[in-house]
Image (cartoon, rainbow, N blue to C red; front, side, top):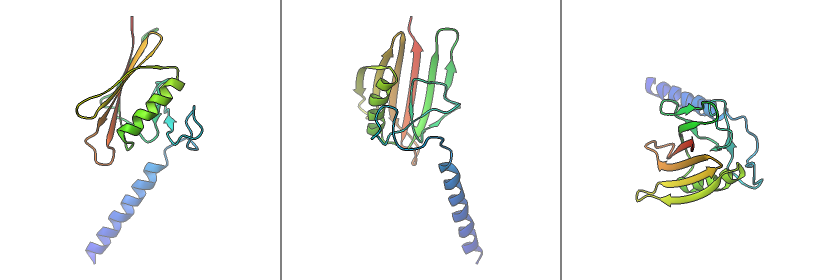
Length: 151
């Protein structure tokens, strides 16, 4: 009897956590800014002050590892995100959405371990997006965004 009640409480708790986790998006629909038929949705949240670098829907900022510094006319961004999109799909997202945001893809490479590295430029700024396998079971992809103003 106690075991059944304990299992029931766990199931109810998991259900509430799932519902709470799914209700945080302010975006509606499934279109990107550039392609109305796409299911990849960029998201910008108040804690992510990179207006011209999109982040796929469902990725969460790792605040403990991420930094943002913008003195004067320069900026330095070192952000880490984890999410459930596969690396190949995330790479396709960035190839498309960064161009829509004014960036030019300069180079794309893949490491021996399967990491995807995308190099972009936009005027005097450079941005390297690295997509790696995450250690999390439920969020298999980590996005590292490194952005800086070049001299």
